Length: 99
Image (tube, rainbow, N blue to C red; front, side, top):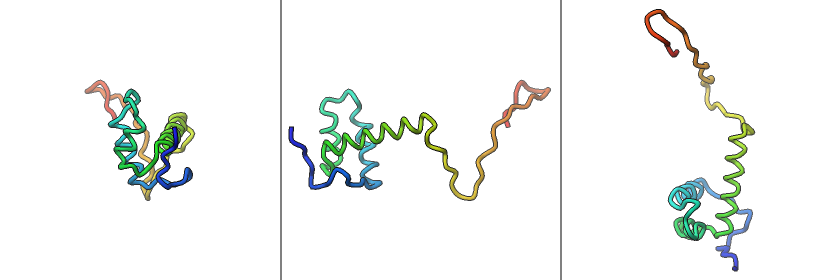
């Protein structure tokens, strides 16, 4: 089957709005959807090819695996410090108080 490349290169960047549209399409067309990638391309208005959508999904899977394995540190933004760890304190008038 010939690749439908829509004039963009395999190394083309995805804009934040294209990524959001891609993520929405994935929510609509799950793993069990027949012709999933063609449906995702159609949902996105044909701005990416089937091959580009598949590659983007592979990158997404790799990113999620890296995050879930602890390979990506959590970033704290702005001047705020991370919240303190929750502690449990016993008091006489109730079972447990979460602070």
